[in-house]
Length: 136
Image 1: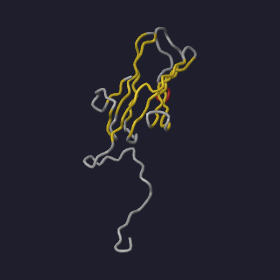
Image 2 (image 1 turned 90 degrees about the horizontal axis):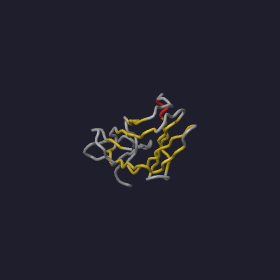
Image 3 (image 1 turned 120 degrees about the horizontal axis):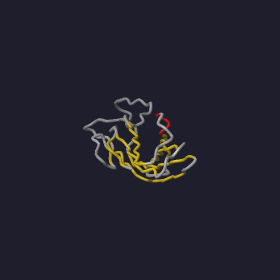
Image 4 (image 1 turned 90 degrees about the vertical axis):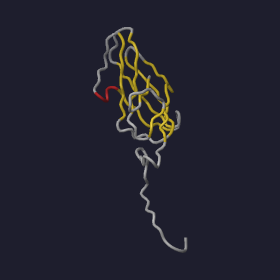
């Protein structure tokens, strides 16, 4: 598994709002049929909060593959994850395979800065501030 930033460079760090890709590579020793690959993303480095579960069938990709090397790309554009540490699990299940690799990788989403004024992935609650004089 490789995490690629917006420039296509491998990194475990991305900035808030930066598009990124996860590249999953492997080799099928024999043809596989009816397999579903999935990616789960957890907040806080794992177990703190379940954020996402996505499968290759969500994008209408096939469930059968010939023997040999293969690669799946998962693109996040826009990247709406809030700042902090994310933990990734990958899964494969079907008639011929059942595999789960928890905590296979971690991504750190860096905070926004005053210079960029990025706010993607942040929750803004419906509150209104006002300024008065006097009684506090």
